Image 1 (spheres, rainbow, N blue to C red):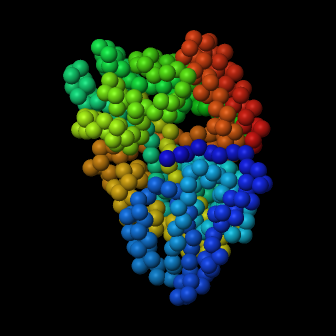
Image 2: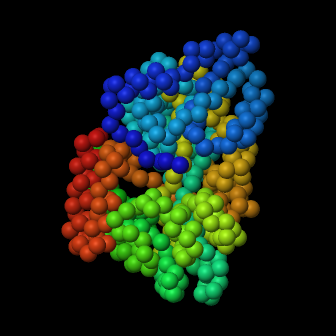
Length: 422
């Protein structure tokens, strides 16, 4: 699942995306039976076909005056498609947006301000990592849909052999001690590639730092603060307890491939990564477990980047009331619980975390999600992710460069990228 912003759209691409993905011309209010038809864009694999069918059936039964037509969209190129739709008179009525994309779309003026609906949707209980990026300039445009975040996926048999109780690992120091014990005899204590910047972000947040900060309406990079440097120091210490490459991220090579080889005790991954490992090596079935990324102290889990989706309504929609009814139903208690169980997601509200108690991976995610964070909430972050000086900074430090010097350079690059794209 992708959560990154997509930047740099040409007029030609916008026109092409609009012609390919606009609402079809039979989506008028009159659906032939007097019902209002709403077009909804959901991303591929966000929900299963079975859940989608069940929800639509239930929604239409509860709202007999509304008919739902769902169009599945691909992540590749979705930024261009949504931007084109928002600028047109032919937008869908509800769009699923990656949580980090909402600010970019809201900046254009193409989204309905849903601030007045927050209280009625139990917004005070929303996961911060979904709610915060769903807002822009103090107004709420995105309604949290579901969340996913990283946990530690570990080999239960290797932990048992080393005499380590994973449930007892509550702090970073305990995590380091356990990983040192595992990192011997041809086994990697942890496979942590050098450029997993989402993991670094969590360590920076734990220290009280951030990737970028805003003051007086101006954003600037913040990797050179003492707090952020301490986060990088911990990353370096953990990364050394395995054989992860220092100049690539978790996709090169895919870390599931590495763990499937059978000589890796831990990786940092969404729980779904365990299923991929087992697909590649069925012999590891029943040998993988999960625990939350540990925090600095035992009373708080480690900070994590909260990925996931929000639901938005384009201002160009002529059926905003029906669209809002759809969103209220899908993000309400009943369907959030069903979605969490069906897809092993974290529900959009902390009070619903118990609904995934019987799913080990999702339950572990829910613990970490309580300390979830988001990337800097500004449209300019798109340019940072496109260029990603954070990765270059991490690789430089891990290969021996001066951390303070490299952090200052990366912070300057972040500042420049954000100001160029804002």
